[in-house]
Image 1 (cartoon, rainbow, N blue to C red):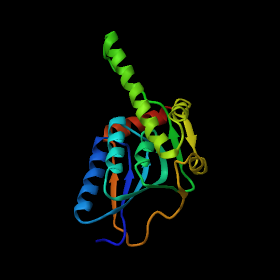
Image 2 (cartoon, one colour):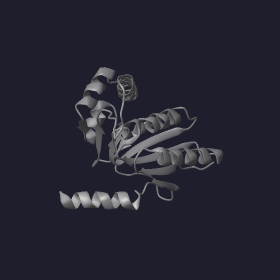
Image 3 (spheres, rainbow, N blue to C red):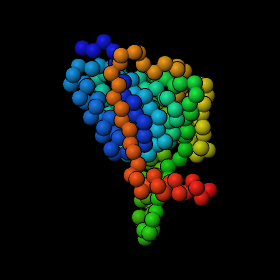
Length: 200
């Protein structure tokens, strides 16, 4: 059995491909006898479905998981971060809490379909708030209000909230096994983003 935790560097959005990769890595390492994981997270957020699924997966594992914010943990990334039994942050980091949105592109929706979308958004917000509240000691109402106000926390504020247990620069010990999970945007998406930046 390995003496040191396996380190997983999660650097990217919370989407199907990255969360599947995360769960597959953990599954494989557990088969090898690993019982401790350090999950380094820097994420702009992403998909609520995959974030909540990953959180419940991490919380249900018979292993010890430490999560460590090494940059920015935004949006549903905060829920993924809450999956840690112990939660750390580097001194120069941030956490962003905000509400849930739904995108509409050339879609015609009837009243019942709109009601269904709205109900889904409300349930998503409630579930996210419940996760954060359960891991910080805050009330669901307080977390919901913070989300709707688009609250940004620095590490000290996150520690006061109970979201972070310890502020720590060191990420892992020397000679640790590190597995990277990253996501590269398709070329055309990156080019479009560069064009938008040039036009600003």
